[in-house]
Image (cartoon, rainbow, N blue to C red):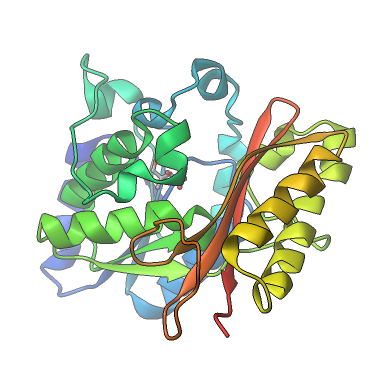
Length: 283
Ligand code: PAF
């Protein structure tokens, strides 16, 4: 695997590859890699001649400074994992290399997608995500880029950015990877205390029950039921639960036939904020 730390070096390398008409798959990450990331890399490898992974803990997308400082950093292990899946290129730049001395976001208009859910609770988060992903697309110029559906809102926002800015890259959304007990894989899971780690699968269990209830009840009733379940839980604090349309991410009250919905959730397990979502059936 080739490792580059500067824009100039990776650009020079990929430009020489593009001259050979080679397709590039890109998987942006913040490191602390797990099976979920590896599944994205495996997908990229199947469809593209070269797969590039970036590891960069992007400061502009953190609304909580402590979360940024404590975000797990495991570069040596990450490199070993990348080698197990035969990743071709790792881009591992410093903050200075990307932002120089101006650690700030560009302002984006994602047609309202940014004001829903995570956008309400994480100020400036999606401007930070848009800034870094757009910048990586400009450096790497991938043919396809891969994102997990755990961050479903992020995925929709990136698709919107690509469309609005007419970027020449195909965005591929990939299924959520889960631990055996159902907890959605996340780099932040390693920061859970033992107690909270044991409690956390309750999130997905509740999502599955909510999906079942949505078969016979309206969105308001299901939301009330979920809220109640978390009120009773001694270790998990619900930040939000909402049933929304997949396309607009707007909360719904009643379902319409032929529309696609998902339930979205954010929960604090002690200091650690976990998110998850589930596709719903609308009949
Ligand atoms: O999903 C993530 O890990 C990050 O938001 C991303 C897409 C790598 C941008 O920093």
